Length: 256
Image (cartoon, rainbow, N blue to C red; front, side):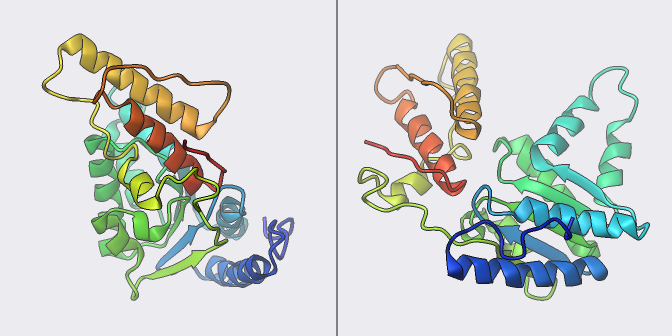
């Protein structure tokens, strides 16, 4: 809630404290009268999810309906509706999300970048954009790094308010071991092709499994992850994707 939110956030940097205080004020104003889209970006742990949840709770406290869900959970629910015997058909669930009076979509950018996932997110956000339905979007990915259509939606000056809750230097030669930011941006999970048509079925299946293991490790790094394979198999791409994911989440990463 707004009541248990630190007014200046969790950062020790005075500039970020001032920034958080301003975002807190506009978030309260949006919660009082939700109109358009309210977009929050910033590294992991900066308080953007707390702000989004506070908006949702403020509206719920007034009796206004709110649909809150993370992007990975949304896609998991959509996939599960295809299962036999599922109590809520796909169309019913998807329409419930598409037409929610206020939708809070957390963790945008944390989902796997499959064509199916991109298509469903595009359908959802395009509908809400065209209908100008109140929507709160939370992302750890810097807005300028989102793909073209999504970037256009989230930065529309007529509909969207966009705020960086905390600005953090993602990388420098000293903390990335010399790996250029351009290279990190170019090697991510979204553009890793694990469905290579030139591979035998068993190798494609193994590559997809390794991709999912690497993504899971990036989301919660613990222990060691060792990638082996012949030249050109994608192991460096996946290693760089892990580093890129962690840096975007505000976590230190060293690539040497």
